[in-house]
Length: 493
Image (spheres, rainbow, N blue to C red):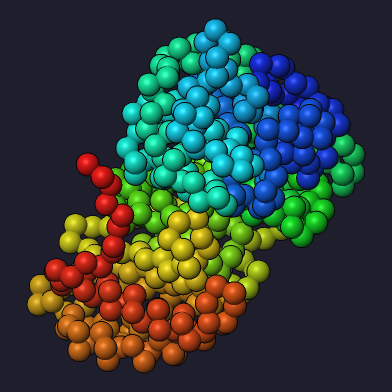
């Protein structure tokens, strides 16, 4: 592979201005840049961990040649991830003839702002939704606002404002729509195929030119911090004050953002975000759709990647348990060498994965359940939306014609130091009639599989009972119970 040319500046568009930066620290966030360097203080710092949404901005990126704008958390988004992007802040919003933007005017007229601190973040999230869907349902609005918290509890007024935005203007006449072709051309011109390197020695920020370039860089510097969506790494900097230098930013690598299906096997590149994965998985593996809807807020789903969720190795990561239950495999790469292993074998112990120095997660391969297979995944949290898992159970069941258990895979998060199979429970169920008596008889086996911990999210006793109850729930789902297993807010007609 020919060595790519190297560029020593980061290039992106901020609102309408071309930006070229040569002085960027690896851990510098977009929020700090906007507020401290550019005095764009409409973007607020509320939590500094991607939870409250006060720092929400839009980031436009080219995906398959198409310009896509997404809401993101500026507090945990690093400048190093923005090469070739268009950053839009609340200051850039404008209506026709000097008037307020339709989103802003709707918020004013429907009293959507109370103390006002969180308002710019709400406006930017609603702006992103309005551009995608000018007449959104209440359900779509609530999903778009999962990552925006209002401490004054003014959600109803905000939802009413969101439903009325199109009464104040048309998406086709919005500046981002009118200027789309020109901005697309400007972003395409920024793609010069160069590697970005800023700084020296350990204090370096690197944006690889390609996946091959990334593999070569990491092979030479195996201790570098790899940053994809930064939904975890961002907190290392903002909460733990960790030095992530040298940092390699891979979120923009097209070669890692591929999702495809061939012969019932879905391949997801390590850089594919939750948002980008949703359509495929929700259609082909329907149980994954509701799970993805509860991973963080919209901003986190727009940034976080499937590969990063796996590579991070957290025992409460949301995607590993269902992927393990589905029998997923993982492709790991070092330099030009690749190997593929069962996903469940990747997790060795707390904080330890089967990843050799210089090796990275390149893709995960997910089998689509065969016809007749029962598959479900359930997440237990303190609040329904935008919350971290207390325990999560995933179940993959095949029944024989005589209704005995032909095969079963059960995996949990939040119950051990790693995402883990419930092998003793599986053994207690295998070959037995799929009946309530069989399920109840298998429950003591949970104590052989798991010894959960007590922490701020749940007690050990709660986790142990919840895990067993999830198996009971799965049994009820597979036997046609008429009892409501999920209580959902009903949207008004």
